[in-house]
Length: 373
Ligand SMILES: *Cc1c(COP(=O)(O)O)cnc(C)c1O
Image (cartoon, rainbow, N blue to C red; front, side, top):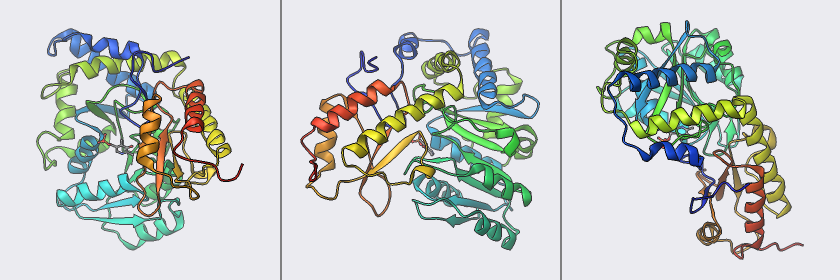
């Protein structure tokens, strides 16, 4: 199987990612936005997302929001935290940091609980932070920290967050649809993701899976008009699939197709299995070539893997990147603060056979060398 048919290269980046040709084909038409047919499509997407999330329609609802994933994170932060509220951000990477930057830029009172990028947050210390600061009303955490590939313990965190009765926000951007999670059992109030990650659509909008009763407290609270999550929800709900402002019609069509393909693949658990196979194949092969992963295996998600630059050679990331690109594979630069790393994603229409071809290309690439054979 060759996923790069009709594509100049295979994207091994965590979104935008390699989509199927059937997802891309839906975008070859100009679709109208306002009529019943379109609104029915939008409603079907909202319904399907509840199914993918495995949550009930009574307890949860879905808001679709224009923009990239960050717009959705900002939408939740600006709309859900009241004037007197305080946000605690659990951080161990760039996407956690970004939530703090969002809070600062809109003047929300916030604090952080920081852990090294290569470590999971310590739950007992988190409990102490919450016990010591009763002003905190909301807690946000990134599920898969795409910076490193770290899978954060959202289940254990939920237990502490709910023990202190806080609102729980999870940035599941790069994990939703690709990793099974029990949102209802964890009592997450807002789960955020976007079209171009594990659902395998194209960029243009994101979505929020919101606890209905928590969402009800957000009316009139947003500091932004276009990012007002409550307003967007109210229009979508009352006008049955209408977006307040121009919707990304091509992306929405592609997303419907991508959801159908997720279901045809066997749902989230099957997709997770494929991603795990990709990741296992990748790590086994890269280790055999002398590369080391940044994270220990027990912290590693099946979404993306960070590798350290080889120590022993005159390794150049740019040259390595260009060489692999010319061979049909686009990898991703590193993002951790104090170690030289690069990243390889496993998500998208990518299969173990593609990873085998990548490993062959890495092996043949002349920009790194094994010193010990
Ligand atoms: C991709 C991603 C985002 C959103 O990034 P955008 O560039 O705005 O789409 C946010 N959080 C995580 C964990 C991500 O992986």
